Length: 146
Image (tube, rainbow, N blue to C red; front, side, top):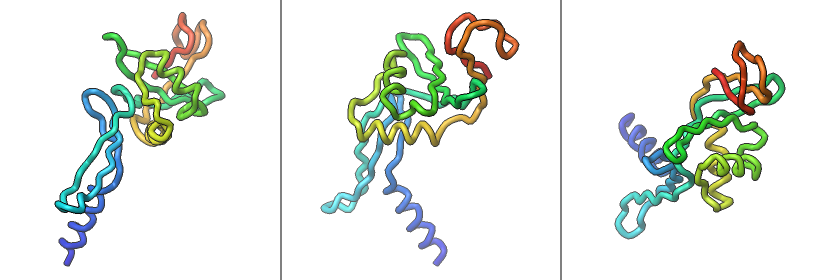
């Protein structure tokens, strides 16, 4: 009896929508059962280039989500205000940094939710001005430090 319950739970879990990280980006996978064959199909829709949530941070007054991606062979690390995640300003900042993001509004909403709920929880100190901060001399605007 217990194995039937576990098998049912596993089958139900396989049918839940999810985000998958693949070599060429993040994909939204929405499994469904093919009514003719009974097989589970897993169509995937591209959402953005490869992207990692590497932590969360603060500048002492505002909370940030720290993201990392690659652009033209270089690593980009951005601290984006939480209030901009899933919003026009947040998408603009990511795209300005070279991240490719879907233009589909529905998928952007799913991606915004995913970014807020997943990833590393490492805490970062975010500096918005130059000068001595957090024991380092900041020479660039919007730097993040662990």
